[in-house]
Image (cartoon, rainbow, N blue to C red):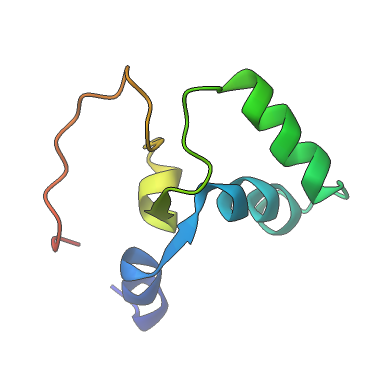
Length: 78
């Protein structure tokens, strides 16, 4: 594991940040962050936009507040 991977695994961001900046930075799309967040909220009304998640969890598909997500994720393991 690189130093950056370890940092990304423990630093948390709000779902709002992950949605907006994931499209801007990861996908390199030229989008309005507010519009992206609004679209995500409409498609996922059950997700808590102020909840915090790591980049790794987000990339693995974990969405805080999603009632369909019943997986147990032990903390502290990278």
